[in-house]
Length: 474
Image (cartoon, rainbow, N blue to C red; front, side, top):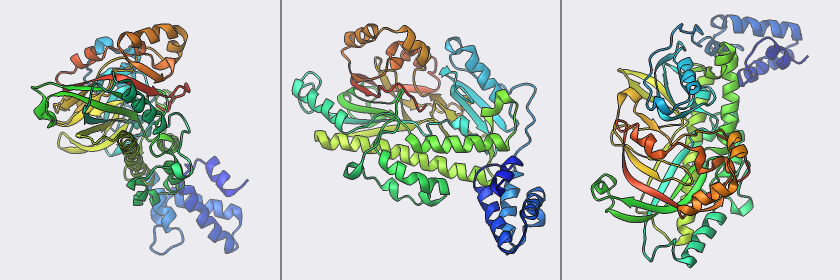
């Protein structure tokens, strides 16, 4: 058995720490040490790293890394969950509430809340908000790190572009040719998109990020599957809200997109979620709530990686919107974007905490965001009201009332198509598991959080483009 396999069998967490240990092992082997002696020595360093943290010593780097392993918080679970306010309890499935309560039993949890679009997820429910002290939990962030919304607003400088057959075709052609959808979607060769995010020095921060950089470059400007989309539609800004946007009241052309960090975020989430579960031993039903201590090497690596994924996700949206605008000869009056599936370092009750918003969006006072409906419902630009009880959060959408499997089994295509046709919406592509019928009524969801956000503009979809591969990265 190789030394690396022996260490893993002995309970060493997979990741960079084993790489450090193998470097030490190689140096010892070159000096003539036997494998059994090397393994015994590595185990001693792991057990008492403070004895080997000597400047210039062969074990210093390994000892520092092993100290990080011991920073993990106690895993004692609270007998009773902390109280957490729930918005829209009457339209939330009990299993989602149970998931939030499980998260409120962790020793590192200090506060939480549940949004009205909530439904069952992994770790915490979609629509869940959980603040941790000195810790970050990869599954509370989610697989699609920094999944986000973006809208670009343009003047309508000619007759209704959706009633004008020629212009409508131009818009559809641009949406089809300037985007890519689905798991593994990418731009190849000289079609690859360009953005300054690829020059970010944080791509060099970890070995994993270095390996992911080329994947990121290929997927820059693409969108995922499942509920990810690019929509073209009209935005109505009422007179009494126009000052909040800084745009005159009226009707505008708008493009709205929803996607995340693609394969980059998925790889980061998978690696650090498994690492967290190795480092933080929890009862099996709570294992997806495993966290990384922020003073640990793994916690620091995840934090840098998550933020890099966030910058990449934003760049994907800006690349898409820039390509559409250039193709159609448009110049945006303004753009709005916000993200979910992320952890933010914020202040709560006078102390720093890591606020995880899994399918929930920031809603600090005065902050603009987007809350989408579905391919057949309106979406809204909203302004946050800064409610401390919700940890300055709001819903990230309408929320599902039906699983993807159930939707595929129960909704006839004719029914979906009739729904969209009645509302004058053209679906260029999209899976049946994203039919409008699988979502809660967005207006009801908004009505249940009037103390969290204020709607200030209404987006009505006219052309919708989604993946139809039946897979999801959420």
